[in-house]
Image 1 (tube, rainbow, N blue to C red):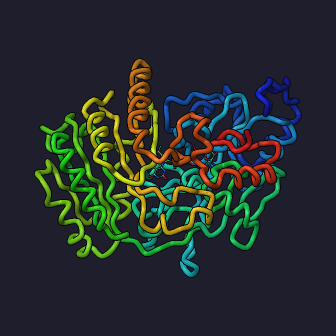
Image 2 (cartoon, rainbow, N blue to C red):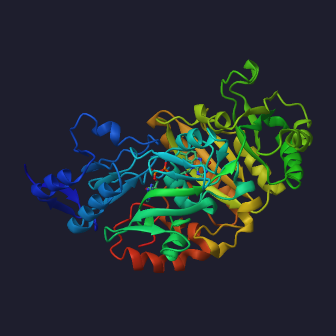
Image 3 (cartoon, rainbow, N blue to C red):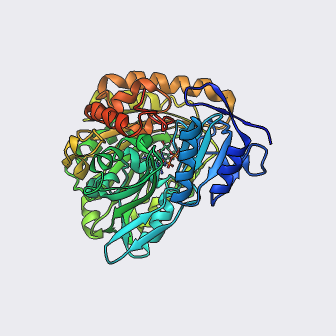
Length: 471
Ligand SMILES: Cc1cc2nc3c(=O)[nH]c(=O)nc-3n(C[C@H](O)[C@H](O)[C@H](O)COP(=O)(O)OP(=O)(O)OC[C@H]3O[C@@H](n4cnc5c(N)ncnc54)[C@H](O)[C@@H]3O)c2cc1C
């Protein structure tokens, strides 16, 4: 066997001796996959089809010991590495060209400890895996809105979803984690152990090491939540969104209502005449007493003339995958994102203008509603800094054919530019596509402290394929 060509940490080509690669395979419990192996392409495929990177080697880790072996290999041979959890990151940071992919996607165990009311979660678990186990006991923790997203990457960036106004971000419910740091050691991080690292991983992304296990608090949720969509034609958008803004001021923390501007997909609960037409979609989840939820949602639901209202009690796990059909893997996706503290008339006007001029049938303008419990945590308490943000815009451009790349990306960038005057300038680290210049804005007031910790725990910047603090 010849030496393996890899890419070194500084980007130069590097030849790793054959015996080192043989030694790596021997030391792993999981498999080492090479280009040319039957499952190489499948293993390097991630959610966003825009990303086509070719790792030199893929270590399919089976547990923390495999992760330690992989990290030691990376450090000893000075090679580039990336870390894959659920493979959903829009920027494709799960993969690297020519390096070692530390693939955690097989480590999907979720263990619910009912006595302690916590869940121990493997780094390859998806939100669907988590909810499946926790909801068997009527429990949940705040995660995201699409069941195939990875718990790991979502949590390390902050993590918000339908329950976050009530229970905070995913990181606000993280009790501890086990992680392999750049020295190859496994550390427990919690308020009592390595507290500075525990602070850093709650919003600092994958910069500090590879998390091999998360421990979350659980809360009673459901099993049914009052949830669903109210759909209005775009022509009524200005009135509907102004009314939404007014109602939203009075919403309790039990209620999260996000909105989406897009062409109506051909889903069975939407009337056929609406399909393909631009719509304003209010997506609601009330995570408390169902009858109180009915009363709280009434002013929003009784407004105007919606083309559909499919809000009703449904199992929490069903709601957690309700939007999955619109977010399947394999399409081409490009995102831009802004944070807002308010929804001004001027901002609404720009949103509606662009909603009338979408570049593809699948493109959606998504406004996530934050606030509530998220914003009651001080900015310096965790690395995630955006505790003043009320709304997060995700310009989610999505299409099928490479021939549409230019048009769709140009549209997203122009839209991003035109909404910028109304935004805070900060950005959610998990929504950045490729723009290194925005990394300081993602870490905000906590940027300098994070850089100091990065230098302390990863001075070589081994963990650099991410929204990186080491540059
Ligand atoms: C369809 C869709 C819906 C989404 N919805 C939401 C939402 O509702 N709320 C929300 O907050 N976010 C949401 N996101 C964004 C999501 O949080 C990020 O894409 C996140 O990076 C996904 O995590 P992952 O494990 O799937 O990603 P991956 O691509 O596998 O990983 C992303 C990065 O995280 C780091 N990482 C992953 N695992 C580990 C680990 N174990 N140890 C150390 N570093 C690690 C690495 O740096 C890696 O490059 C959504 C994304 C998509 C595509």
